[in-house]
Amino acid sequence: MRCYFCLQERPGSEEHVFPLAIGGTIVTDRVCKPCNDQLGSQVDSCLTDHLLCKVKRAGLGLAGNARRTPNPLVEMLAKAVLAEDPTKRMEVRDNGRGGITVKHAYHEAVQTDDQGNTFKMVTIDASRPNDVLKILDRHRKRSNIPLLTDAEKTDILARLPDAIKTIEQPGLIGQFTVDLQEFQRGIVKIAYELACMWLDDTYLDSATAAEIRNLIFAPAEDIVKHDLTNIQIGVLRPLQAWGETSLDHVAYGFVEKGVTIIAVRVFDVFSAAMAVAMPGDGTVPKPWRGSFLSINPATGSTCQSNWPEAIETRTRRHRPLVPQRKRKGR
Image (tube, rainbow, N blue to C red):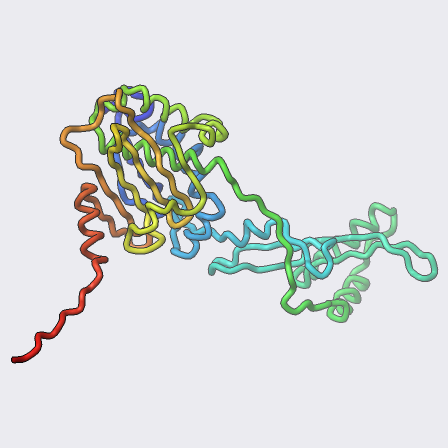
């Protein structure tokens, strides 16, 4: 088997064109294990772990190989602070049910009372009462003060409930980043693998195929500048009408003025139109009527056909009904 990427004769492995983590169902065995591993860690992950994809995966319950549905709220609130007091950091964790648990992170601040005495104010979450004793002993040790006795510890724990302050429905302020470039290599990979599957096998040796292979592993800014690609966040207008639902993955290929173009949509988040073969490549199978693919990531329902059949099916399903006129009786 000749690998789509390294072009070497090697045993194949199971490679999902649309990654499994986002509900992909189409598999090829024309990718060797080393290339597959590299794609998974350096290419597919840029797409599947993108925050916008994680939001869709969470909504559809798509766990992928990790067998754990992502919780985008945890990522979005990883550096959360309390809205009422931004000096107080909060710890946000996945509760295992698609929601989050919020706890007050350890915080200390030096303060001065009305008499001019300086002291440290320590704040911790109420769920960690025993940490109070550890914190006090740590500070006493640093200051060469005798550690707490058992009686003192008992007294402190007894007085803790009076020191608890409850914040009802606390507001959180989070900081997070959204990738605007790296995800594009995952889109290019999908288009390239579909081109390899849909076009003649000589496509692998074409100049355009070599250019796209290099692009997949090139710096993300090279993809943005490249003439072959038009990738965006959101759905390109020609891709909006396809699929059973607005969240379906969609791809289709066709030839326009000698240029073979593959359009790709991932959920309703990313889309692209990409030139995968140029007139001089001579790689389009004859006759080729174009190809169409749609995947419902929630159900795994997959539709594959040629491009004219897809257009006809779409037209038939959405043909407006013409009301029948009643004939007048004689």
